Image 1 (cartoon, rainbow, N blue to C red):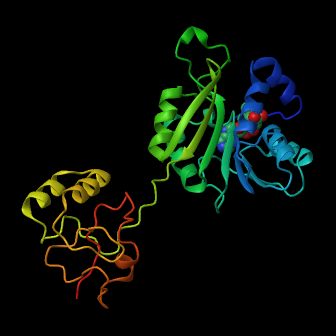
Image 2: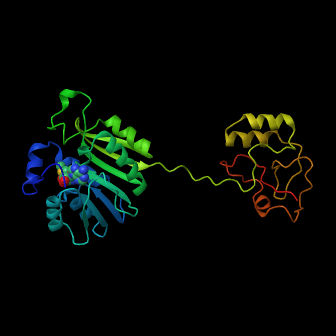
Image 3: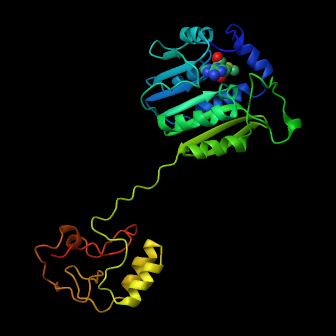
Length: 286
Ligand SMILES: C[S@@+](CC[C@H](N)C(=O)[O-])C[C@H]1O[C@@H](n2cnc3c(N)ncnc32)[C@H](O)[C@@H]1O
C-alpha cells in the first residue's frame, strides 16, 4: 500500500543508527501526550511510540493507522491485544470518533506540504491535542544531518508547519530536538465560552442621556464600558440590593419594590454584572 516497502525486522536498530535523536524524539513525543482515555496514532510503524505511551497509561484505548501491513504486523505482536491497528493512508479519512489526542512520530514528513496542511485540518476535528514529532527542514541548510531522499521524504520547515497548525485551529509550539528534528505540541484553540446576555441589545438603552449613550457606543471594551457607565450614573433610582444598574431615569422601580414582570435574573443580581457582559441593560420591562 505504500510507495516504499518497509522492513520491520531491524527497523529500530536502523533508526537508532541513522537518525540521531530518535530515542529523544520518541521520549519527548510520549511525554507531551496528556493523560487521556482514547488516542489516535498516525503512522504507527512497529509501535515504538504506542509502547511508550501505553506504559504510562495502560488502560487507554489506542487506534493506530499505517499504510504498511508489514510494520503493523510487527506492532500487533508487540502491543496489547486491545490496540486497534488499521492499514490506512494518512491521506484517507481518519478513523471515526473523537480522541483525547492524536500523535505521530516520523510519518507525516512522507506527505507533501498540501497533504500535511490538509491532514492538520482533519486532525483538529478529531482531537483537542496533536503531538507531532518529525523530521523538519532546518533553518540553516548546512544543519541537515538526517538523510532524506526528497521524493518519499518530503519534510517541511517548522514555521510552515506552525502556520498550518494555527490555520487548522491549534495553538502550537515546536521544540527542536536537533535542527532537523522537532516535536510540535498543538492544542486546539477554544474561544472562551461567552454566552450572550439574555436580553441585552447591542447598544446602550435608548433612554440613557445622549452623552453617556454616545460614549458607550464609542467604547468597545466591555469592562471599560460597564465601569464608565456606572461611574457616570447618578440620576437613576436604586434597585433592590442597592446600586444603579443602567435603568433609565423613567424607571418605575424604587428601592424595596420589585415589579412582577421584571426578569428574575435582573433582580437577583443587580450589581454583579459579569465583566464579560457588555453592559447592564438586561432588564425587560412590561
Ligand atoms: C519512519 S517510520 C515511523 C514509524 C513509527 N512511527 C516510529 O516512530 O518508529 C514511517 C512510517 O510511516 C508510514 N507511512 C509512510 N507514509 C504513510 C502514509 N502516507 N500513510 C500512512 N502511513 C505512512 C510507514 O509505513 C512507516 O510505518
